[in-house]
Length: 405
Image 1 (cartoon, rainbow, N blue to C red):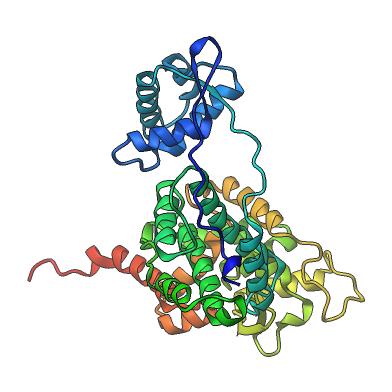
Image 2: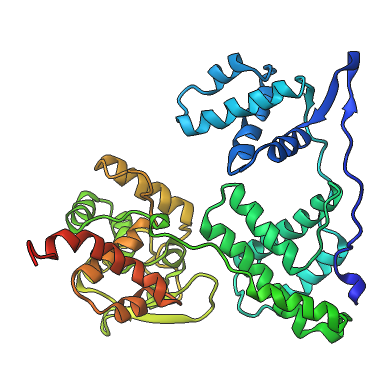
């Protein structure tokens, strides 16, 4: 089934079409591609330039300084300067007429789609529909990249070299290190599956050997700054005290005291709260099995109050009934943001998920062994837990260092 891998034939590059009155006509993508090639170090310039071009097309504005003054209102300088450079480039090209890109047809070739479906059918670690949907989108994006590169006349196939170029392209588009690494991880997992089933898929030894190099491609380094902000202990306590609604208070307590993810809160049942044992049974993201964690006394008291009030829970509810009926993650984010804003805690990087970071950070700050924090938050990698340690180290550095040596 070697023929099932994406085709390696490269179609010719799309030509620039002459427009009316002798003026050149280019599509948005053609113009941005030319701008990218013109730049010595593209960075996020092409992405910001595309946003400006689309804005001008939508509002029937020329691509010039006057339109930029309208567009730039309220934007930071680092969002405006790339557009200024784009306008200079555009003028050097003779200000061609720009038209919208034609509607996209299906990009993922049937052969690649067959590989994706086969892999997902065997991917037992992807339990939930949402996880499979995320993997499908990520893999489709990669094969779409191959298709578009070939369509533009550039060599691209399902191989380590192209995947490396794809990772660099994602980085230049301004995607976060988390997103880039997730996309790369999905491709690596698909590749591992393809190699494992190479006989059934009809791959030659040469093709299989070429794909093994994919495992050597390294992702992006995730710096501490990528991690979201967290509350300090006083802010956490003030947040809980400010909430009068028993349902909201129970939800926030599970996030900020127990460190649950928003999706984990929505999955809780009445039976998952074991007051007598001081345990909370949690079903993690993308997993079908539950893991017990310690139910802290402060959270236990809030949950007791919520359950005993009967707020939102029928009196006849069984142990399998939802702890928060019909609750969705978007509703949690909305409610948390509401309380953040009321207490003036809504700052850059602060979200509902920041409450999970708060729980982990405060456990480290109180001297809990990092290995137990990892176990409580259910981090697969200890490196994730170490970010809380690094944050505490940075904060304590000047206080702990001696005045003289």
